[in-house]
Length: 172
Image (cartoon, rainbow, N blue to C red; front, side, top):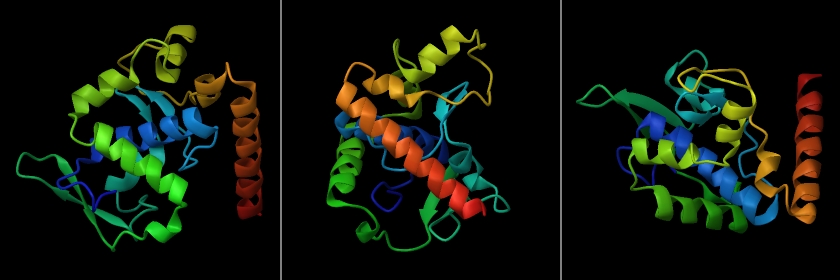
């Protein structure tokens, strides 16, 4: 994704990745990244992506590095050539669709989109009385995106179980 968007700001990446997962879940029930998003002041954020700018915590250093732009914003630079082979054709369709639909939007506009009424971030903030200007460890319930579609909800729950099982296997 970094190689597809020039001068991609770090904070914008956090929103685009969320929107990729949101689109994938709404479309078929399975997220592309499997990241866990938390309710932070500027919307859903996966801490692994936020930490990408900290070299010590950067689990993605093989793929991307962070440079300061002229205005001191963090710009991402691809460390390797993007390998579409790491994703299914379906995943790439979703990634490309999100880049096409949202890639040119400003960070502020992406924040507005992820904060819209009824979104998992909005529901978490309202139901848990989270002050909107804080970063929390509250994990967003992305199943809300498909709660009215029993088939997609079942697929989402199964994907969650598989991700949990893989995490357990990796930890042992």
